[in-house]
Image (tube, rainbow, N blue to C red):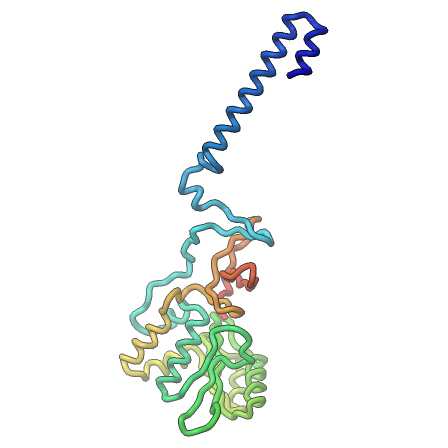
Length: 263
């Protein structure tokens, strides 16, 4: 403003007056806008429902929306056992069902919810023996059959622990080679139909108890195999397919594709 006044000394009076009025007006308009924004605070004009769903961008170009929306895989809890139960639950619930099933058969069981398991999901102990008598591996696969490669790896774990008995349980099926390998090496290969047949032999009360285990908590939301935390729906910022990401992100960066959330 002083520069304008100084300039005005070298020009006609009416031009200096006009320049001064213009600068003064700009100053007042800018000051008024700043005071209005400070009074409103950030996003004050944004509707509350839009503010609640505002994108939160995280490293690696991930975007999550809060609150999280329900996943499309949710199903109503069934009242009886069928293949639909296996399709509705996540992998950790399936392992819990298998453990309960062996406990009902009289075994003492031991398992862990997450982390490296060394190829063993459930340890089976007998009251009449010292140490584990058998091990169980669980695969919650939908559509993809268990092959001979997985069966050989399981047999290697059995041998490492000097065990002659083992059960491989899956919601899917087995290839012909995998079934033959299991038969030749003392492995009880239970597929989805075999598991349902075994469950059908339990009492109605036991079957109900197994259903309660299957539908416990957020049974449809996968558990992070690394840290045991429930995973959350994630949407990449560039419009790619949604995926499951660990709820402990960024401390744990485990993820699963939506279509392959079963383990």
